[in-house]
Image (cartoon, rainbow, N blue to C red):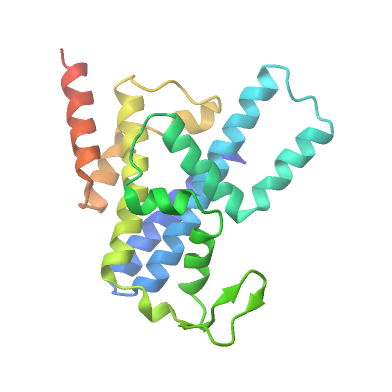
Length: 209
């Protein structure tokens, strides 16, 4: 499941880039968040394998409760943000830090990218609120989201190639973070944050010493 989730995450990521090039920015934004969730699921399953190998999971009630979380969009989003921070990737800029601190923020943005509706106050509809619309998702917002996710993929791939990041507990996922993937990520999406540019340059310079 971890391997398939990772491959599906890449598929959705690549599709979001195609939609971006077709100027379908709301749909590109929406797919990019789905890709983020699938990557979050991949990392959750890798964490599950780690704890299972450590003898902490034994097929009991806790295992089932953990796996149930694979169907929670907010949990998968939050898990990815926490992993990005925990692994020291430091890719969360101010905008994404705000999203990471609010469990509902990214999910609301995702829903607003596909549906027209009224704002909500908790579970109730705010009849006096603003109308949400996918057409508010512009080129800049879609580009930022895609760049953020592409940066995460790039950082992981470069870190693994250069042996600066440890192996994934799921061997089928670990082997996919290879030079071929890294080169495709560099080619398919040219936008990168300055943080990732510096990290890639640093990794490669240290490896060549």
